[in-house]
Length: 194
Picture 1 (cartoon, rainbow, N blue to C red):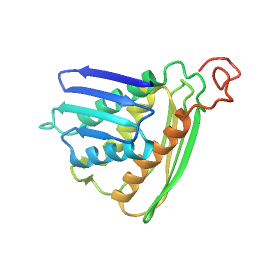
Picture 2: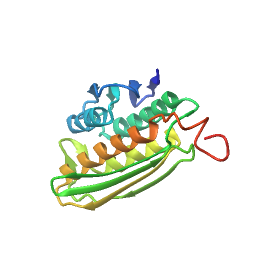
Picture 3: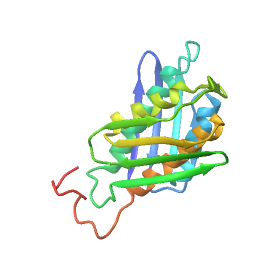
C-alpha cells in the first residue's frame, strides 16, 4: 500500500491530505478555489490516484498561500507514498492535447529537485484561480517531493484548456514514473539509491 497522510498547519493554512498512488482515480477536493479543486480532481482521475484534500486557507487575502501550501503538502505526500522507490520506473512523460492546447510534462523521481516551467498564460485568472499560481503550485510540489519536473506548453491559446492539460499530463507522467516494474531490482540507478 503506497499511501501517505500529511497534515500542515500554519497561520495561513490548515491542510489535510491523503494520497494513494495505486488507486482508482477517486478525488475528493475542497480548497475553496473552484477551478483548483477541478484541476486536482482531474489529477486524481487521470493518474489513477485516490486523493483527498481539505484546505482552510486565508482566501480573504488571496489564493497564494492556499495553492502554494497545497503544492507543498502534495509533494510531501508523493515522496512519502513512494517510500524507498524500490522497483519504480522513475521516469515518466506525457504529451497531452486538449482542444487547442498541447502540453508536455516529463518527470524524473530522482530525489534531486529541479523545475522548468515554459508556459505563458495570458489570462489573469480562471474560475477564481490566479494563473500565476499554477507555476507556484508545481514549483512547491517539485521541491517538496524531490523530483525533476519539466512542463512546457507546445501550443494553445485558451488558458483554461492549457492549465487543464498541464494537470492531466502531470498526472499521467507521474503515474508512469511511479509505476513498479518487476524487471527493476532495487532502484533504477547505477548509484544504488534515489
